Image 1 (tube, rainbow, N blue to C red):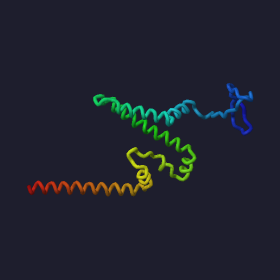
Image 2: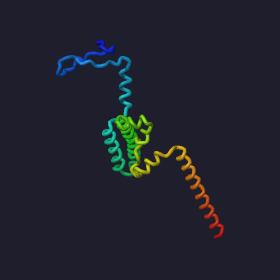
Image 3: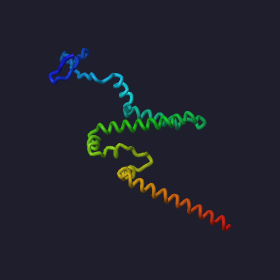
Image 4: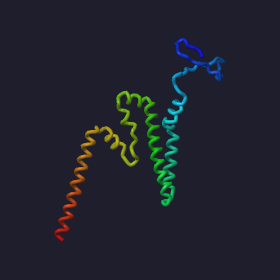
Length: 166
């Protein structure tokens, strides 16, 4: 171990075979437990291309299995949902490490662009809905639910009147 000019403790890399022939100094992290580093690496999202390949595999498997193998199809559906979440996490990590992601994170807008639209949605509609504040979304949902209840009640009333008149 060597103390560098800046006062940080470093160690010499004995296996380094660089062009200069000298030993390379690497910073040591004395307070990091190797087990914690291993756990963090295992809990980190997978590489994006690996996650996409796994997601594609489980989606293909779900479609290819026959109807009577419902347990295997359910497992494939569950695994596809898990890998979809992992793909989203890997996309968030990749976006957060980009320049645009860092700028948007500094502005507090990064969560708007890390959400991935469903394939059936139009991108403009999903972006517009992401920009709507949460209280307005709740009010909109309440109005739609009330409208649906009134529609069902009126249809039931009309059906009851038809039955009474007949």
